[in-house]
Length: 79
Image (cartoon, rainbow, N blue to C red; front, side, top):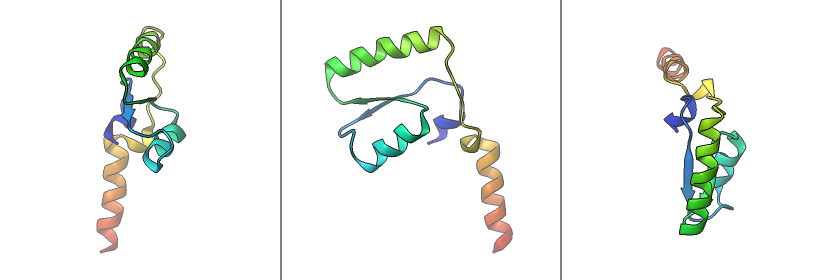
């Protein structure tokens, strides 16, 4: 979750690309999603390398530390 707020590339290895967590990861358009098998992982690592070389990082600011802290502080103020 914290990685979504960084400018680092993300490789998400999942057991099932159709489950809810995979759906969330896909919806962010922030990670390369791959099922947990050797051929798909190797293919995705090559794709990730290309993305890094092209500097295709797009951090989601709503997941960075500052944004999360603001949300937590708003909840604390409500208590």
